[in-house]
Length: 351
Ligand code: COI
Image 1 (cartoon, rainbow, N blue to C red):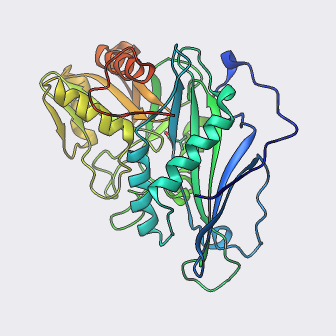
Image 2 (image 1 turned 120 degrees about the vertical axis):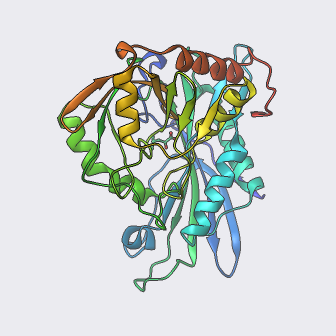
Image 3 (image 1 turned 90 degrees about the vertical axis):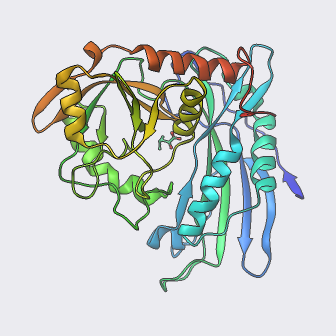
């Protein structure tokens, strides 16, 4: 990759790493790559963080050709910076790009762009407990053309945001089980990280927030089976098994979900990916068979679920406390990322 590098002349001041929250601060630089049907991928640049120059007719603005990823880098006590499972994120973005008829750069461009950007902004990688550098690779159609067809021009860019806890604190989340809106339908975009999925989720999430809930639990098109939380996949711990909804084409298969599945299988636990109805979950809470529930996501990490509200009834899980399995998983994954745990899965990529 022939990379043009322009360093900022006006570096920003670093935020207070103790008060990062999520997605509020952006580092000094951006990585960009451009695609044109006649030229392929070209003009690779590391530039000062800046606004995009987009034609008002760009296809992303009208027909929503937009796809993104969420991944993280960590600063270890030794000062070394590592990426967590970038190949997983690339593969998911690649398959999403096929579903959305977008052109995706090669893995080498993706990885080198991200690594060089982080090297340039390495002082932005926070090193306090429960902090990380959130990486947002994004792919959009930029051709100025109003006919409805895939764009012939694309922009791939990566921005970086130092972050702390996604929910602002470690308390178990309060979840609203959504009974009217749905996030995705069979044959649709649910399995991709398309910007459109997040647009579709905003109304229900906004309504739920007004009622005091943290997140929405989506059900399937028949309002029977549990799907995901939009920003997280979900796991339910029963006395005899751990269950997470199977990926039926409407759920986004998260990297943390996949990591948790591998870790629990390796521990020899009885873990099932299967369809699970909201009724089964409610009766599990009522009978005491369901002992713990948690969400998994890159941004959310492992977040215990304290309550579920369904049909105007609030159901409390594990006394609204962090459960032992979610705590164990969070500690294990964090130890692996920070180098306190041997990387037996090959998930760590040093920068
Ligand atoms: C992530 O976990 O990376 C997400 O994309 C969730 C949300 C911040 C959009």
